[in-house]
Length: 189
Length: 189
DNA sequence: TCCTTTGTGTGACAAACATCACAATTATAA
DNA sequence: TTATAATTGTGATGTTTGTCACACAAAGGA
Image (tube, rainbow over all chains, first blue to last red; front, side):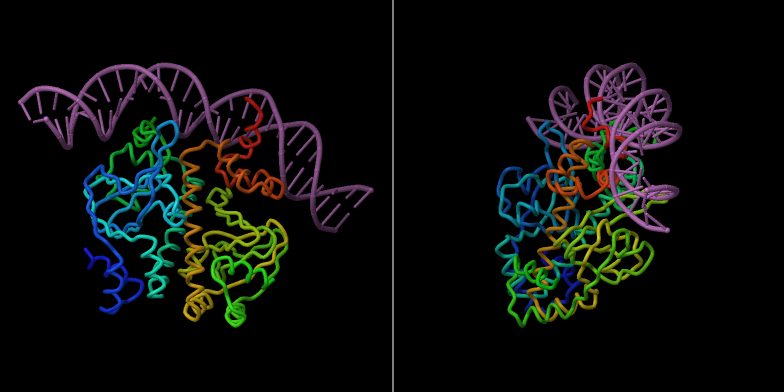
């Protein structure tokens, strides 16, 4: 569990045993079953999460009851409703398990302490945040430049495992098309 | 020019005169006229930019010659082709002026030196990067939940000045609709 | 096991949006 | 100023996508 976090951080900043002991003290471990919620829309966001194993989705439920998926997060990803997390406001999105999932939890207070106590970790989070920003921009670009079929192909090229792990309805909710349209994409009209 | 940067940074981390002297030494000033390019697609990305005044757009030109706008950046915004900047690869996007624009330029080397020499600045950039990530996620959500008209209204609510400063063709290229559709939105069909 | 969810495909039709064509107006530079 | 380019609106038409309806298969709990 925690060793996975260490390996993950090491890819950006190497840590001594002592430093990692400091880091690990800020995290708690939690396990969730499929369909359980890590964050519930409307509630306070206590943590951001490092996914050790499993698969979760960040989802927005609109007024008409439709689900829209902002992000899937699998092993080695960081996820939360970051807007609510950093501003300590109520969640506008939910974070829900698509598989049994193990996560490491980091409260905002511990996040700040971690950054203050070990500047390397600020740099680590900076790299992660830049990566997230760039990734989101690429997703925006795919909305601007590509139709439903192309977006679907791009998604499966980038994350082939999602095809097996996630029902098509949810892939549609990520791509921004109806599940019926998605179902018809590869069959010629 | 530089005083604007100081005010901007101060909103997140206060700096002493000495610290700001260190910061300012890493930036250079550049001025561009309307239609000029700060970054040209295919070329190396030397800097990320802090916009002191004016207006620029981050734009992707696709194979069929269409323009897609990833972002507008005005006063007090940071902008670049961040993927190419951080990886020191060729730009896939262009950064072009929509108005005469003054910017402060920061090379990747100076960015790293700044972070290493003054940890406060790492924290500053972390806050900015998180803000950028969250902003991009909101934009993704607007693609998922809203049609062209709603996205247009959201854009003008958030950035009313764009309505006067930017031609409708470019607003359309930002929203992901044709300029004809955009032109017809407020007139009932 | 059976029985209820959940997931998937497909037809018929409606709505949203893109494309092409053209006109007219407003900036901008020589 | 005058000519050229940039910007905007709008009609006609076709394509893409959404919605509703239904059937059926697969998965999971009692």
